[in-house]
Length: 553
Image 1 (cartoon, rainbow, N blue to C red):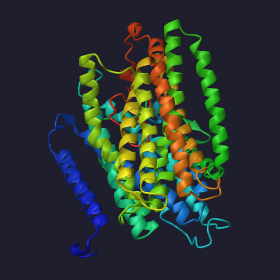
Image 2 (image 1 turned 135 degrees about the horizontal axis):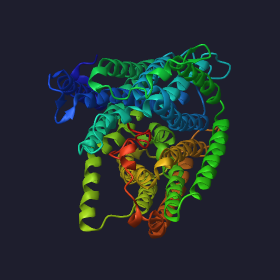
Image 3 (image 1 turned 180 degrees about the vertical axis):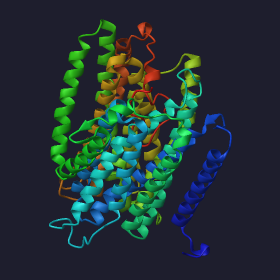
Image 4 (image 1 turned 120 degrees about the vertical axis):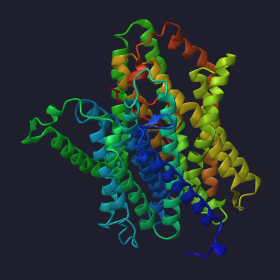
């Protein structure tokens, strides 16, 4: 360990993050160790879920911060190939929760699904720590198969965990309990704290000491999350249990249904292991499945009355905006990560650490935005849901425009001032806060009960499509998929997509009155959709919407 007098800026950042982590852990330990059933007005089970999810996000975002750099620097993939792999991986992470949520609702219950998902994730993150000898690159290197296996475990594990842990939060409270929104706010603080600290610590270890140390830290974080969740079971007050314990004991293929489902999970890992190696196949499957889902939604929509049908059309409009926004936003983990590494004056700070800026902004700005919407509601000035989404896309486009302005201002050969990376993340975060929680709330609010999960599945497909599109965009910033990103090539693409996004956002705001009419808010009936779906209390999660729409019991 360096003497403190020799510490640089990076060392201080990591030290502050570590102290923050220790403080949160101390508060959490105090909260759950008290004899009283509640702490700060909430059940102690909330804090168990807070820390379990915090550690899971620590591991996921710590690994995510390193992934593109690891692919390029360790496995010697081209920039284009690395961003395509990154896009395929993150898109699958957002599709599997649809199935994981369904299995939990119908068979396993949320607690068993989260436990199984945490075990898979722990395996996946620790497998990432086995680098293998990559001196010759990825071609004809058997060690690369362990890397694909690690991604497969993480993808399937995320499907079981991400879909369900936030649902248990809602189950800790009666439907009419006014503490629900504040509970979700506390929970999402845990998400963003884990994302920020995990990115800093795992990124620092991975880039300065060795990839295995960074990924190992992510794996250790996931293991701690698993331990917290197991030990905290009594504090969950029996919530998240299977809908029918007897059903799980029924025999299927000679074994209990429960073990059959776990075996199916491992089969899913094998399928994803094969699929993730062929990223173009992932893209085509998403396109075909997305088109089929859209067609099915339209067929179901025409069975509804006029107002409910119009609301489905409005939700389809919202879903179609997802690939636009997330395709640009997810450049953060792909091309922006590489651009920061090579062309930004980082002053010695590892590039991966800059991905912690987004969750830090979320923590700081999330409460301000929540208060802003309430203030505008009282004044009668609140923008409509489609107008907020249009504003989000404008801000996302402006983030790229500002970055290009800053890069061009210093000349074609100078390093880009780090200020413009902070501004990029600022505008992309404010855009996220105008779109992600707003969109989740709209889908929950507008869906008829029997189509609620179907419509949220469409939302997740739109998000997943944006992640895949992000990988494709990253591959065209150099010399094609097999080339490397160039400074000018990236800036040219950033300028084009920035202006295009601003134009799309302005167009969305222009048509927002028409979309708002399709929402028929004046005839919306209170059928308690918001009580049946998780996530409406979300403040914001970095790089994607928060909770899967599994039903609460």
